[in-house]
Picture 1 (cartoon, rainbow, N blue to C red):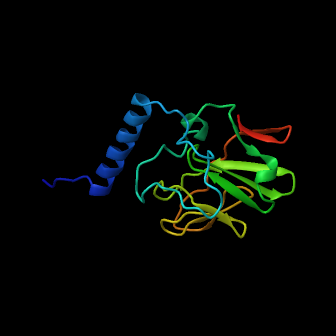
Picture 2 (picture 1 turned 135 degrees about the horizontal axis):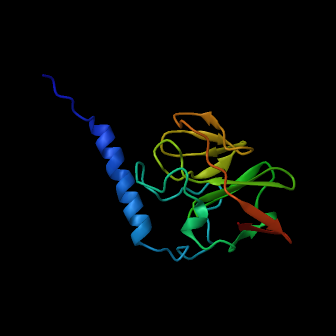
Length: 161
């Protein structure tokens, strides 16, 4: 009779998922670390590569209170965007007056994306790049697009819905 072992990677991924779920249920968040409330384009995020983060389906608004303004529309560059590391969300403005929001958690190994440049949202860990228009993978190794987040734009203010 032959025995079948579970691959180490499967065990580690399951442990990371359980740890993330336990952390999310057991801890609250005050929604920020102080300062300006976000990381502006070009400034690296501080999550270490491979660090467990919320699942791809988790809403970034779960990391802070919904309805709290992220930025004014004038702060998001046309053809670019801004990463808000404390809220784990990135807001882009692909064309003037059109705002999009995506999870700032890379779908490869859950690193935080660090910047928006040249029409892509860039992850510093392994080089994944995502389109600012729809979060689609432009360069791997990310296997899936960045999940969209809901925002509202009213009176020149962008707010997580």
